[in-house]
Image (cartoon, rainbow, N blue to C red; front, side, top):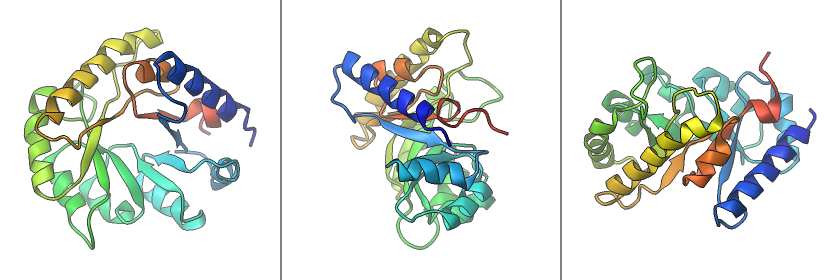
Length: 220
């Protein structure tokens, strides 16, 4: 695998962190490896990267069995409750908790459930997952009450013609995070920004960015 895309993304992150007044390494890069072979992940792992994202439970489970145990797996896609068992023991952070039924399934099982982010449908698009902003506080209270450690919020903004189109949605996410943190101080992180708009996400306060195409190229 050609690592030039990965190194370019890291340089872009460093510049965005500096522009935002952040120290280097403040933002976690989740390399979204969905649809790419294990060998591609291993090349990036050998280069020192540890945070990888998948959006299909079966694919994450299969890859995790073939790769080193110290990889930090992020589940970034829509998750069916009947697939929770496939990834619960492997996932480091669930980015897409968006409903009570999923929270209930995630809370069940041996040991404390892995930490999660609540996905917010910040653009209120019918075809997308995520809780509506108006229902965020109620869901957060429920999830915390059943014993899941919620560390932040995640969003996928509406597709725009240029990166700046995402800015108002990212700013809205920061406002929602600040509001919900008044009741739940542990909710601090924001997962927002992908290949085309992650610099804007960092400028607006992203803690995690999820980048696939710019690192691995198009999926086959």
